Image 1 (tube, rainbow, N blue to C red):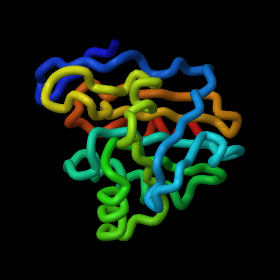
Image 2: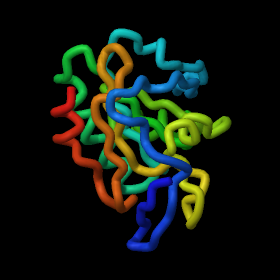
Image 3: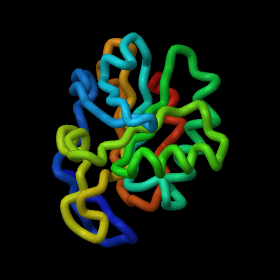
Length: 165
């Protein structure tokens, strides 16, 4: 279990992020068109998983915008923006912002992705949502970088995530 904060108040997650060097566990997440994506959907691609509580908060929205700006220049890399938001909210946000370089994925149905990767917030006002974290995997699905952001309101370290590619 990771201990993080929300507004300086302690909250906890359901576990720890996957270990660097481990294989990212397969997943089933819902895309904006309501189809299901899995790890094999992105086979052979390097992935940056930008994980956050809700696209309808300032810091989460900023992370999606920031990774969108970087994504077009990344070779053989896809940025996945993952939350428990409904796919409709993710699509609305990216459409309104003109963001086309990231892939939104929703864990709204079961939260299984968050639980499997130690991301589910288990107490406090955001219980049930995902913590803010970054997981970077290579083209073989091996985890090469992780960051559990210590304060949910803070942005992740974009430079470290992109440098891991």
